[in-house]
Length: 250
Image 1: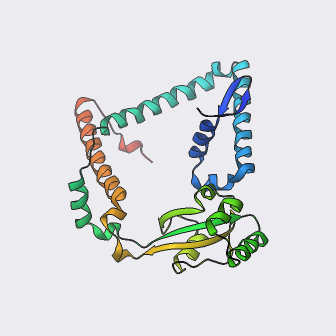
Image 2 (image 1 turned 60 degrees about the horizontal axis):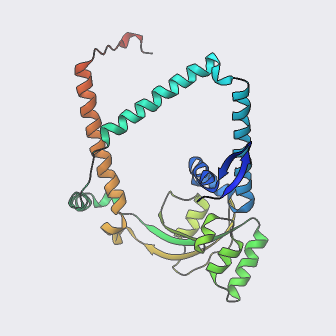
Image 3 (image 1 turned 30 degrees about the vertical axis):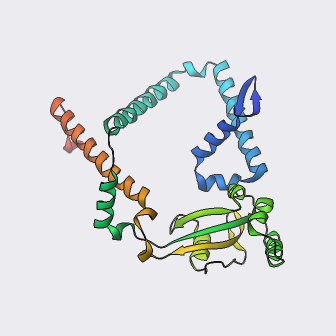
């Protein structure tokens, strides 16, 4: 059962609620709120939002005419999205389709990638201190757990495999120009200072179907869903009266 991290007039905010909130703000933004202090900031904002909700209900804002207009528009948009999901929900992809698509479109999926770990700290002095400890023989993974403010600290700093365009430029440039086993000098980004360890590297020629299995699957699924959507819209266009007034389009 998820632990309670706060209560507002008895309403619980749990660890699961915090995780869901973090997921809504995206990984790049979430990285700015790593560590205990960052999590406390997120919880504080969640409390603020609950207080606003309570105040809004006490002042009957949910009955305001402007709000009801927004509510109806939101409900329509949610229903449109739900209807779209119902149209594409039966799309499936087989292993044979994935294999055939990969073999036909290798150039689309082959790309350079690296596997890296990092230790994220606030200052260059802290990063230098980490490097000194590494030179003294301390384990990278243990130092990450002890000092890194990134959520990856729980995994010994491991970020897994990633391609170009997935990390901020300063971090990406450093990682892709390192040799396997190398540990970087402190790399400054908007998030702080990173000490990077390169665990592995793959060239485009080394890309295997297992490396990009999910990417290939998602591309086939996207194409199938698109075809299902187009088919449904064609059907609805024939069923309903649609008029387009091009002369009024600016």
